[in-house]
Image 1 (cartoon, rainbow, N blue to C red):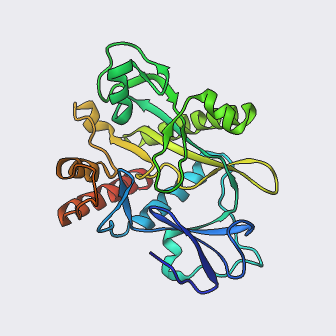
Image 2: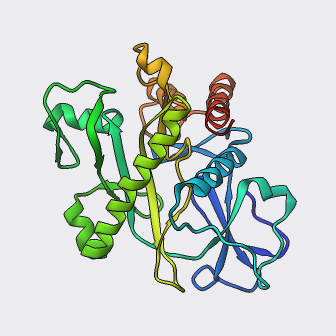
Image 3: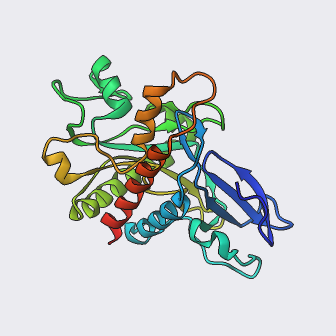
Length: 289
């Protein structure tokens, strides 16, 4: 974990990101925050060892690439007179952002039936309360993308899938509808961009916050990265190979086969780390060229 940056004070660490504020300021009131993406990797609510070399810089590069193409307000900000220089050592893996009032919702959009959605569908023929047609299979494209939000649990607790009605209770009807509609719009736009590069965006999660100065809802956190999204190779999918993803699914699969999800997870083998790093890099190359 990065903990000492000249001119900056470490304010918070999540599973994979560290937050800094200008020295002398605090996280509650600082107008600008430096978000540093680490090489840490998490799965099943645990931070694993070792990390994935270069992951933080790759995911930051992908986030900023998407922010520039989505056409929606986001949290990226330029430095001002109160902002210290960003140290060169973490420049590639960091974003200078506005300190937003974050909504306690993960805005999940699914275009394909897989993962936890597939498991739920087999039991209820629905995903997060959204009824789906009978006869779907793992990896099938849905008739249209569905919005399946989750409540953002405090660090150390499990996020909880919730209904749209519950999001209305949490943030109010107007903001709940705005977040849903923005999420579906962004997903459609990103899916089209990915498809041009023979990549399928199967599902993703967005996070949003309100700009304290303008009141505008802004797209925040990472966006459309290999950590927050499930991407598939369109050519492999068309050939019948479903579930070969450009993300940490390699890590999840290895853990599922070698750990009962109790206690401390085992260290990742070098070959799993290398394969995962390769998939992250492949996606960056495929999307950005």
